[in-house]
Each structure stands twice: as C-alpha cells, then as structure tokens.
Amino acid sequence: MSTLSRPNHIGRKISRIRELRDMKQEALAQALGMSQQSISIIENSETVDEEKLKAIAEVLGVSAEGIENFSEEAVLNIIGNTLQDGSVINGNAFNCNFNPLDKVVELYERLVQAEKDKVEYLEKLMKGK
Image (tube, rainbow, N blue to C red):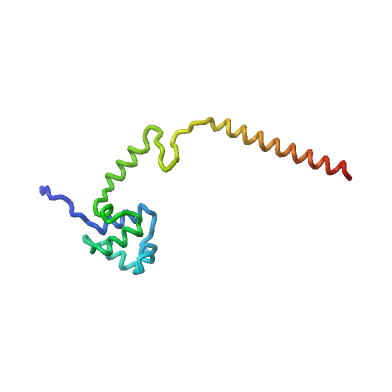
C-alpha cells in the first residue's frame, strides 16, 4: 500500500467552495465573463493558473491561498467547535437568554391594548354623530 498523499486538486477545491457558497457554475462563469463549460474544465483541472485562481477567489469571496489550502475536514472542525457552549457567530447567539413565553404574552398584551384603543376611538366617532 502506498503512503503517497493525495494531490492538491485545485479544481475540486474551487468546486467545493462554490457549492458551499451555494453558487452554480453558471453564476461563477457570468461573474468571470466565461462560459459554464470553461468553469467545468477549471473544476476538473488539477492546477489552475495564478491569475485565474485570483479572479475566481475574488468572486468566491476567499483568498487564492484559501482555495489552495482548503480542507473540508478543517471546515467541519471549525463549525463543530464554533457551535459549542452557546457561542456567538456574526452576532447570533445560539442559546436563548429570555423566556419566549414572556415575549408571546407581551405581544398579546400589546395587541389587546391596540384593539381597546381602536374600540375607544370608534366609540368617540359614534358619539360625535
């Protein structure tokens, strides 16, 4: 059994990052001024010239080095480690620090008060006639 490491297939990495960004080949092609077939060829290529890689990286919102060093295992590890212990990502807390039932009651009370205000207003209008 050989202990050779897997080749650094840049095209597959581009493809996977594009998929993670929920972008179709057509969208990437349009942003780069290429055809969808050209993107398919790039994604099936083990290497990509430096200028194309930089342009693709810019459209995908990553660095060229980010594409070259991309590892799906690393992504999964980061996600797994980030979503532990009530972490905050982009300002979103993943544990609730208030009672949702209290918020429902508060909303209901505001709706009831709004209806009372409407009734009071309509009664005033009716008395004025």
